[in-house]
Image (cartoon, rainbow, N blue to C red):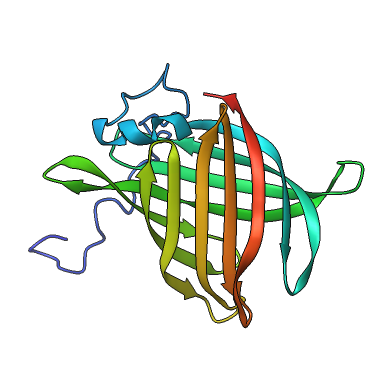
Length: 197
């Protein structure tokens, strides 16, 4: 906007296209940006993980699923978390896509240094956003919901609890959920192995 013509179009309106995002993100600590030192305690989680799990809830039938979780960083003091799952039939064949999530894990800092406390923000395409607070103890991470925000068309989810751990080189987790009038109940559990990173 110029002083001569306050209604002139902004300079970016007709600017040429830009190149691809110029900053690298990596799930492999051997390449890409240097890991931010506040993430050292979460280093075992960085990578691409795939495996199988079992799901259920008081209002639905139990189901088997496969899952891929990608945990990466771009040199700043947080981890990018992305999960996608798919339902499996009795012969372990893919049936249909299942849950997806994207979000960020970040350590709580005190004087610029990471504490064992964590914050996580996770969002689903079904209209649910969960803010978690948690704690890291060795290679175990535990999260509980601090707040749940839903769109007007999302299923009612009111609380959650997640426990992650690195056990014998595998990523194990269990997730409890309170939803659709049911109290906190087991929902998902899985064992995933590192396939990259």
